[in-house]
Length: 119
Image (cartoon, rainbow, N blue to C red; front, side):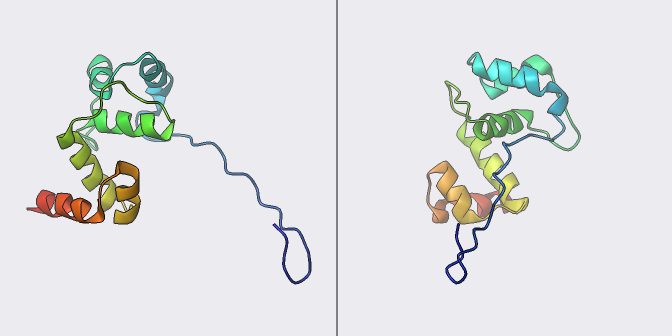
């Protein structure tokens, strides 16, 4: 990218590939292999029997890993699981418009999901 005033070319470092650093990191190679084999996040969570006091829904975290690594699963996450994931990510600081774009639903629907979870 060149500066319009002086013509100096600004060098920007390329973005690094995404790397997951959460509590499932020790299991990441196994999770990625199972996702590539076509297993669903629920099946992977049951196989690994991963439980954490911070996350009562490891299948949602595995679904998040699949999305970030661009791995598609054959069967989608249940609507209840999707809603829980939306609420969790919203409270973690993700904006409604970004969530709406990722999940392909309107901002109004995102707001309804968050309000319903708050009740």
